[in-house]
Image (cartoon, rainbow, N blue to C red; front, side, top):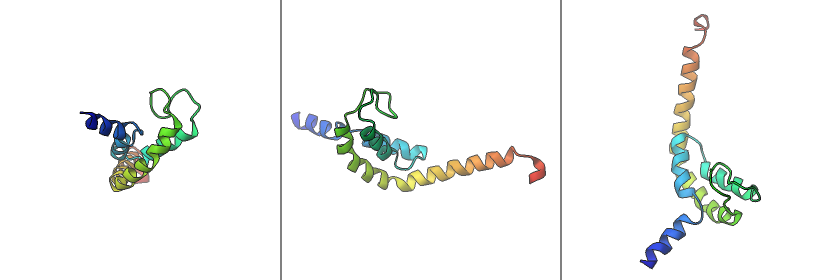
Amino acid sequence: MRAGWACLLAVGLPGCALLTSPVSALVGTPYGATRLDVETIRDGSSGWSPGLMVPRIPPALGWIDLPLALVLDTALLPLSCANWGTRALDAWLDERASGDPAER
């Protein structure tokens, strides 16, 4: 039982890379978890964690989480880029469809 709690704390305590990386990739934001960790480290004195509605995460946890976030974000980069490209193409097609018919 203690080993299970130790594993849970080791994975969950460093930060949010395991949670935010897949979400960022599905939204189409490359390196979303890495950006969040850099903001956490940079804004260490603020009252709230940047990008999250939770009390401030200590910058030390951002430093611990940064390598994990970088590895996971890099592994999910193809998915993130595909989603970003799909969203950009959809926005472009919507813009073109709603434009002036004389421009076509």
